[in-house]
Every structure is written in structure tokens, then in C-alpha cells.
Image (cartoon, rainbow, N blue to C red):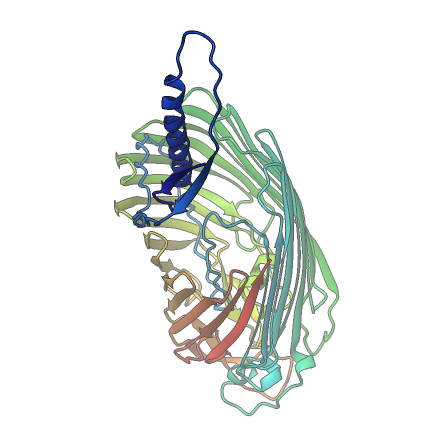
Length: 598
């Protein structure tokens, strides 16, 4: 018996090398057998036998292959080619900027990293000084091309405030429900809103002009608002369609603690029809039909006056022709409106021009625009009470006639991530309301009007810088100059309003934010105290409130993908300023809480 010795030269670490070893072994065996077969004679018949042999495989050594070098550099994809984007012209609204300053709790959430799934749900809760509790629940459907639905619930309350503890407490609760269906290019939806707010008339110290005041009970100075709103709407989502539409119908209901109420049926529609690639005709229309009840302020003779009911009608439409190409965009039309309100001697029906012109100096870089227009602006108790919650009974609410109006401005993106918008507007307003504290009960505010047209000059500027979602900084400023005739001061309408805001993503888990507000002084009126309640007080002199300086900071730290904590500091300058005369705000207030996403 012969012994055949075969050396296994190596065994490899990788599986591919092991397969090569097996093939090499097979080749060696075939090579040994081949000479034996070829040595046999080809002629004649001979018999032979295969000798017995023992094959022994001896593993003598193992060769280790060197470890391969891995390339951790990400594959770089070439940037997509830049395509020409159609310029979309927008004409900024020339309404007066809102005067409400509400530095309430605003919680910053960290933006989810793509392509993280959209859960659509989170809850937040926080507590702070002044006995403050904040809570929010946000429950929405995930991404879906067929439908969307959700609910957003908010609540914040402070058990104490800046004046006499619970006498200046407040609370706000709201819920917003929405649902939408998508069918082709059309979207059909509905919204439902509920709200309840509780305030107190705690401005009694300033109202008495320094005279001693008996501290009232919180229940005696209570004010509360209840809100309900429902709306159904439909619009097409493709602006390239020949026929575009956006229409809605809604109803709003509002009540206060004085038995006043407001029922408001609202309609709105905008239809556009393309005449060609660069021109179209549009019609925008709004209507509001209000039935409200209110009670005049009490006097000695009439401590409980009867409720008064009235109706208020508002209708407005703007047909226009629009033309847009690469450089020029203009709109030519007219606004026709009707308001049944009679706060001052002004015509109920109005006609204003609606002419707008835009010119692109450099695409996506610089565009200038100008226009001549005017419009009626609907004024409701529903909206006024969100701006000033310390309103009196017996208000003479009237729609504002804004016009004729001329405006001009420009928008620019001078550098990557930098946006600039500047606009100047001059208007002649009628029925423009101002807030003035009442001479009988100075803790409450009436609506007062200049009996002639009020000239309003507004200069507006916005600046925003956004650096790749890492750093964001912006500011907004408004300067308003009022030319009055019969009113001595533009009561509680400050000339200058400015704000600054910014966020900084320190790293993936920590986000910082800042907000700052500055309002110039505005005017209220001071009255001399008397000892006869329910009678008209004697005016003392006009009081200018202190300028408003408000600084807010916040931070959000994400512990896990689902849990984060946040902290907020409001009014860190600790200035108990008065947006409305006699009503100081809280000093430094701090909130801390957590967010859970699911």
C-alpha cells in the first residue's frame, strides 16, 4: 500500500479563499491520476488493477491574509442641475400690523432628522413660577396622500399674577380639530375650534390715580370668553390648472362674562381662470353677517341696562386681470365693498382701485413692487378680545375703511440664506379704532374713533438669515405715524414695534432660542378719583406707558428620540411694562418641562 502525502498549503480567512483551496486540491488529485491512465497500452486487451493507497492530508501551516482597508468616505453624488424656476409674485398685504403683544409660552421643538418617520403625536407639560402650568397635546395622522386629520389642544394658566396674587390670575384653553380629503387635484376639509379664556380686571390701582383702593374679590372682577368656530372649505392644489378655486363657509360664536354675544356667518371665495400662459382673470370675495347682543355700561340710574341687539353686514369683492411673465407682473382691478356700520360719518358703500405692479430686476435676487388700493377690514368682538381682553360693555364695533392706499417696496435675497423685505404704505383710514380707558370704570377700555379720516404712514421691514438649518436669525420692525384730527393721541397704538428672534442648533440634541420685543410708549388717560361710584370721573392728564422691552430665552434637549426636556425664561429683563394702561405684566417667569413623542 502506497502512501500519498498532500500538503494543504493554506487556509484563508475569507470564504472566497476557502473555495479556491478546494479547487486546488481537486486539481492536484486529477493531475496525479492522469499519468496513470495515460501509461496504459492502447492496443489489445489487458487487465489491470488499482493498487491500494492511503491518502493522508497533513495541515502544516495556516497563512493569514492581511486585513483589507475600508473606505469610510461617503459616496458623493453630483448636485442636480439647476433648473429655471418660475417666479411667483406675491403682493404683501397692506393691513395695519397687529398691536397685540402676547409674550406667552412658546415651546420650541427640535426638528426631526430626515428620513425619520412622522409620528404625528406628542404631548408637552411644564410648570413654573406664579403657579403656572402649561400643557399641549398634538395628535395628527402620519403622511398620507389620501387624507389628513388631527387635533391640537393647548392649556396654560397662572394661579397668581403681578397684582394682588390671584386677582391677576389668568388661564387660556383651546382645541383645534382638522380633517382633509384629497381627490385628484382637489382638497376638501373642515376645521373645528373651541376656546375658553379667563381674565380679571386688575388695573384698579392705576385707575384710581394713586388713591387708596379697596382690594376687590377675584370673582367680582372676573372676565371670561367662550369661543366656537367651524369652517368647511375646498380648493385645488395644482396652481397650473386653468381653473383655480378656493372657497369656504364658516360660523363663529363668541360670548363674554357680561352676557354679550356674537354670531358670525362667514363666506369667502377666490376663483381664477387662465386666459393663457401669462394672463388670467380672478375674483376674490368675502362676506360676513353678524348678529350680536351687548349691554351698555351700568350707571347709578341704570345699574342693569337691557341687552341691545343689532345686525352687521359686510360684503366685499375684487375682480381683477393679472399678467405675469419673467420680468413683469401686474394686476388691474377694483374693490367693491359694503359695510352697514356707522361709527363715523362715512359712506357704507365703497369703491377702491386695485392696481399692483411688480418688476424683477434680477430673477430670485431682487424684485420691486408698488400698488394703489384700498379695502374694508372686518372688525369683530371675536378678534378684538384676543387683542385686548379688558374690554368694556356697550362697545361700538365698526369695520375699518382702509383707503385709498398707496404702497411700494422690494424683496431681495442678496446672499445665500439671507432674505430682505421692505415696504412703505400710506393710507387714509376711517373707523380706525383706538383703545381708551373708560371714565366711569377706568379698568375697562372703550373703542374710540377719530371723526375724520386718519392718515397712517407705515414703514415695514423684515430681515431673515438662515444658515443650513443650523442657525436662524431674524427681525421685524414697524413704524406707524398717525395723523389725527379730533383725537389728541393715538391711544394704545405705539408708533414703533420691533422684534428679533433666533435659533441655534448647538448639536443634534440641543437647540437654543431667543426672542426679543421692543414697543415704544403708547398713551392712556388718567382720571381723578371720586367717591361716587358709577359717575363720570374727571380726566387728569394723558399717561404714556413705559417702553416695552421683553427678552425670552429657551432651550430644548433631546434625551432619546422620543423624550426631550425644555426650559424657558420669559421677560428676563424683569420689566413690569404695561401694554394697556394700568395693567402691568408678570416679571421674570420661568417654565421647565418635558416632551414625549410617539
